[in-house]
Image (cartoon, rainbow over all chains, first blue to last red; front, side, top):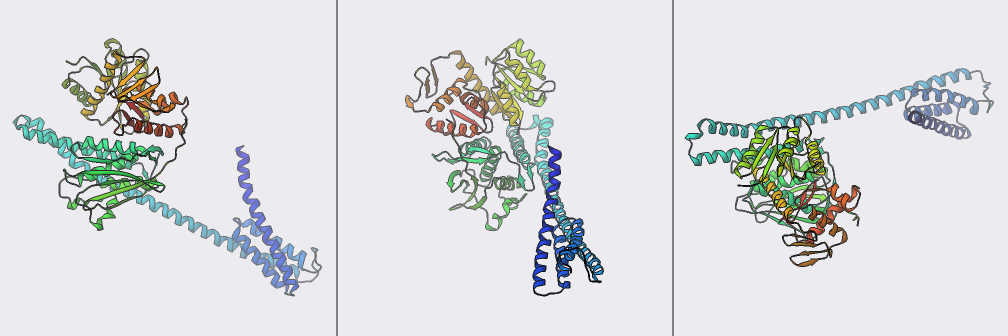
Length: 371
Length: 227
C-alpha cells in the first residue's frame, strides 16, 4: 500500500540515524571506561562525550539527534562515571553544575557542527543548480545558434527558388530553352538541398544535453548501409558508390533511422567534397565487440588542424570550398551526437594516396533465433 | 493509352496537382478527392484500379478510409505520409494498405510505386495455385521445393514459410508484426531480431545482396518485388 510505503520511507532514516547515535555513544562510553582505567579525570571523559555529540551532529541530518544525545551523554556520564557508579545519584556537590554545563556545551557544539554541515550541503546544492543552469543556458545558446544558422541557411535557397520561379512566371516566354533548363535545374537542386537540411533538423531536435533519444533494436548492418546507398544513388545518380559487402551477417544495436541518416550524411559529404568522376567507397568490418563502417573518398582531403573541428556544430570547411556547393554545418556534428549516443565513436583520417576516410563504430548485437 | 484508373485522395492542392500532372503525363486516367468520405464514395462508384491516399485528411483519418474500403474491395492502396511517422505507415499497412510514399517524394518514386502495383495486377490475372514463378525464383508448393535458376535451394522450415508468405503477398509491403504473427503466431518483440537474421540468411541463399527480389523497409518490414 502506498501510505505504508511512505511511512516506511520516513521510518528507515530515523531508525538508521538512531542506530548511529547509539553506536557512537556506546563507543564513547567504552573509551570512557578505558580512560578511567588509565586514571584520566572526569574532564577528559566529558570532553570525550562532547566529541561523541559532535560526531553525531555531523553524521545525522536533524538537530533533534544532537539535543537528545547531549541529554543522554549527561545521563550516561552520571550513570557510569560519577560516584556512586551505576546509579543516577551524584554525591559530590559540584556535579549538577557540571551536568548542566556539559549538556549546554555538548548541545551548542553539536548544533554548530550540524549547521555547518547543512550550510555545506546547501552550498553544494547551489553549485549543482548553478551547473545545471549553465548547461541549460548552453543548450539554449546552442539552440539559438542553430536557429540563427538555419534561418540563414534557409534564406539563400529560398531566395533562389522564389526568384527563379517568379522569373519563369513573369518572363518565361522570353527565355530560351537552355536558360529555362538552367532555372529548372537550380530550383530542383536548391529544393533538394532544403529537403536534406530539414531531414537533419528533424533529427537534431531529438538531441538533449548533447545526447540523443534512441529506440535501439537489433538491425542487420547490410540493410542499413544499403538503404543509405539507395538514398544517395537517388540524389546523386551519376556518382559511382562502391559497396564492399561482407559475406557474414552483422547484427548491430542501432536506432535504424538515425544510423541511416549518419551514413547518408557521410556519403553525401564524400560525394560533395570529391570530384564527380571519382568513386566513393563504403565498407564494413567487425572489430572486437564493434562493427566498423568506413566511408572513403579520393577528394582533396581535410588538413590536420581542421580534422578535430569538423565534428563541431556549424563548422564547415566552406571558406575554402573550391566550388559553390554548400555543405551543412549540422551534418557531421549530428553524426557525432548520434554515434556517441549509441556508444560508438566517429573518426576521420586521410585516405591513401589522397582523400578522406570517415569511419564510425557500432556495438554488435546478439540474436537468439526462434526456430 | 494506359488503361489504369487512379483515385488520388489528397487535400493539399499543390501536391494533388503534382500527382495528377505526373499521372497525366504518363497516360494514367485519374479521378481526385480531397476528403475521406468522398474517397470512399468514389472508390465504390468508379472502382479505380489503384488508390493513392494521403493519411492526413480534413474529415476522417486516412486509416479509417482504408478500413472502410477494405470491407468490400482489395484495390491496391498506396498511402502518402510525412516523414518520421513510421507508426502511421505501419498502422496503414496493417490495416490493408499495399505500399507507402514518404513526403517529400520524387516523381520517379511515385511512378516506380505505380509500376510495382501494376506488375502485381497483371500477375493476379494469371495465377497458378500449385506453383509460384517470379524471375529466376520458382516455388513448387506441392513438393515444397524452392528453385533459383533451376537449382534447388536448401531452405530451413522457417525460411520456406517466409518465402511463401512473401510470395503470396508479392508486391505488397508486409510489416514486421504481420510477418511475425504469420510465421511464429505471436508478436513477441524479441522475434523481430531473429526475423531480421532469417531474412538476411534467406537473402544470401537467394543471392539477393542488392535487394532486387526482397526489399528491406527499415523500421517497417519487407516486400518481395515482382520481377
